Amino acid sequence: MKSLQECITEAEKKGVAIGHFNISDSEGFKAVAEAAKQLLVPVIIGVSEGEREFIGLKEVAALVQVARESGMEIFLNADHHYSVEKAKQAIDAGVDSVIIDAADKTLEENIAVTQEIVQYAGGRALVEGEVGFIGKSSKILEEVPEGISKTSPDEAELFVKSTGIDLLAPAVGNVHGIIKTGEPKLDIELIRAIREKVRVPLVLHGASGNSDEDLKAAIKAGVSIIHINTELRLAYKEGIEEGIKSGEVAPYKFMKEAVENMKEVVVKKLKLFNNL
Image (cartoon, rainbow, N blue to C red):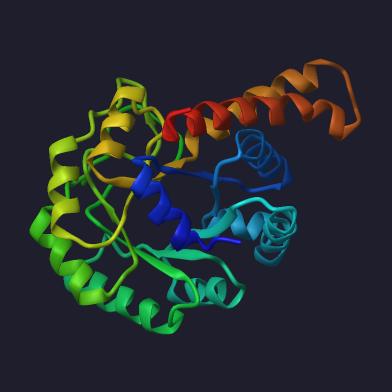
């Protein structure tokens, strides 16, 4: 069984990216796992602080472990953990990776918090840090949120060297959520410049709503993991609404549409990320 680090290294050699999909319940897990199994590609399940509270940290870890025992290359990421205590809990629970998100703090504070998690992990999990602010809301937004910034290559280099992180999430024109007026274009040259400066894989957050062309270019420029959340949430909600209209009362029947909607999104994204 390959580790997440091994799968990332392999993806880099192939010029592809690993898909990361956030879930908050077993329906979401089922959709992502079935899509990855169908295409025979690695996949990362993500749970933020809020999502893990809903599904249960130990519960989602168990789901991932069962799928892994069947031969799947499936991994668990503690996504956007703002609390040091909760990030440590996630590491102790056996996640494959964790992102400690202190991007809204000063660079010095961000480095200090991230260093603490790197030291605590001690190699038990990959640690991801974030530099530059891309917002926090995974929903439909009227406009680009205030305070959005971009990461400079020098800042990225300093952050990686100072913290010892395994993965870097830079701000390169990406925004959490989907912007009604149109998603900002990714700064592909900035991605390339940052990747040339740092010796760790890059993670693209907030990729819901970005064009296929932008995402392909981002992978070519050096992105190794791509996060999708809002598009899955929308597909889930629309599927539930359709399922309820059917008049079914059995959850496994009226939730089927939601699972299929999410699976369709995941299959499409995994094909794109893996050049299938």
